[in-house]
Image 1 (cartoon, rainbow, N blue to C red):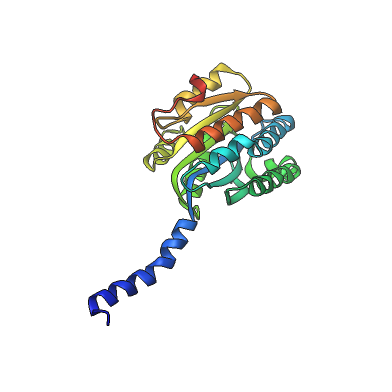
Image 2: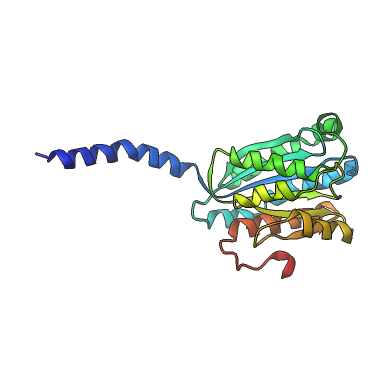
Length: 242
């Protein structure tokens, strides 16, 4: 016959086990959210470069290998588009742990291309509100349905904030929650690359890369995603310094 104390302990374990299992099922190695610039300085070709490059990258075997070598073998993944109005969710939060899930995410990204090209100005405006994109990303990261080991924002764009508010407050909020902010600059304008280095990116492992065509964009996204998933220490090398 079990002693009362032992019986109570066993009952507590039995009640808590499903909750622990459920929490473990929602754990991810990294939650990655990516914001794509669709302001008026981005033409249709550059929009295609961003979307097709990301879709191609997420299918990369190197990304899946990085995911499957993680502690939880899965990541949280979301994408939005931004300018100076309300940001628009392109891909809602989803978990990626297999090639099938990666392919489904890539297919959904591509399927949204016509909608973005046809309605981006009507939905999200035309100016470049970098701080607004950061604030939106922060809210989405905090509301994510998964419990991550790390959080990452990839911000893609080709210009400085021209709405009037600098990025200091929004950037600080992200960094205060441990989020790493990385940048991808469309094109090779050194002024914009330096702006991203000084005003956008943040965190010990943050970096900026640039791309100006779909193939290069796919390579850049693949490098960023693989690094962000596999990077477990702040001393790991940054891809822009390799």
